[in-house]
Each structure stands twice: as C-alpha cells, then as structure tokens.
Image 1 (cartoon, helix red, strand yellow):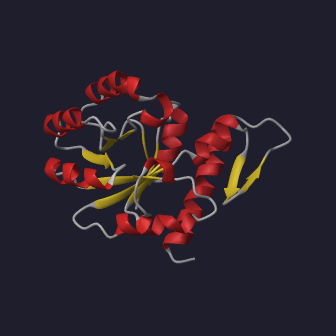
Image 2 (cartoon, rainbow, N blue to C red):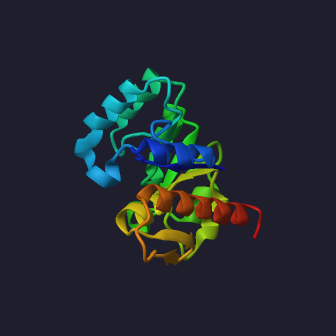
Image 3 (cartoon, one colour):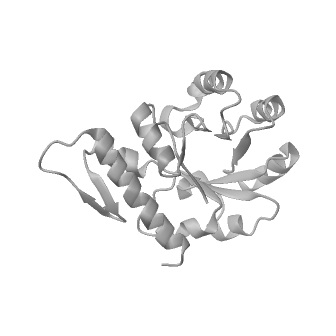
Length: 198
C-alpha cells in the first residue's frame, strides 16, 4: 500500500517520513482543495512545475475538469489521482485515462458508499484524507491513501500518536520533529498490523 503524508515542509520531517517508507512532499502533492480552497490552484501549479520530474503522485484539481485534462496530458509520468465526489464523475475519470481514483474520507463530500466505490473496476483506489480512527480497517479496501494524523498530533497538539484514539502529551518539552517521528513510527506499526490481518 502507498501511504502519503502530505505537506511536510520541514526537511527533517520529510526525511523521517521517507526513512519510514512514507511518500511525502514533493513526491506527493496535495492540491490544497481541503486546506486552502479552490483559490490555491495557482500554488499547486507552481509546485508541479517547480518539482517536475520529482512528483510521483498528485491529486487532480477537484471539479476542474478542463484543468485535469491539461495536467494529465502535460505530465503522463505522474500517478494522477482523480478526486471522485459524484458517481457521474467516473465517466470523466475513464475519459482521462487515469489509473487512480480517490474517495474522500468525509461522507458529506461524496454521493456514494464505500461499498459502491470498492466495486469499481479498472482503477487503483486511493483514500483521500484518511482519519477514521474508529474504523481504521477501512484502509484494507484501498491501494493507497494520504493522512495527516502524525503531523496534526505532533505539530498542532504537541502530542505523540500512540494508536487509534490514543495519544500522549509529554510533561517535558520534546522537539516537534521527535514527536512526529514517534507518531509516524506508531502509525506505520498500526497500519502494518491491519494489513497483516491483525
């Protein structure tokens, strides 16, 4: 399974993520749709150009079908992930010839069920924005995913992620990079356990 940890702009955190086998910036580029809204596409395009030849996975711009088409033609070496919000968009994904389709984690952002999505043939399946700690076994249905779980807990909360719905806040100050490293190690262990059937 491909697991991406997006938007790690600290070189130390990026190196840690890579050492643990995660894909991260700029090998994986989020399109900023969730974090910054549609007005961030200019930034997304600048990063695609800046890191051309280095980007391995990138999420196509949500709902911007003409732009999607231009991007797929512009760099066919990238594993483009089509963010599927509506069932009807599957025909656009097929027309574009993408190999990956992405299912938003949030139910409100799609008009279909996980069951419907997993039965689609002809695509590899990506889980966009994995955060379901109550049902982590969902990841077995996918070939790839991105998540900010270790980033969020280490940078925003000052905590170490221990496991599903379990965190620890150290009483002494620990550098953010160390919090991230331990959280990422724990996430890798938990995901491996699930994929092994544990």
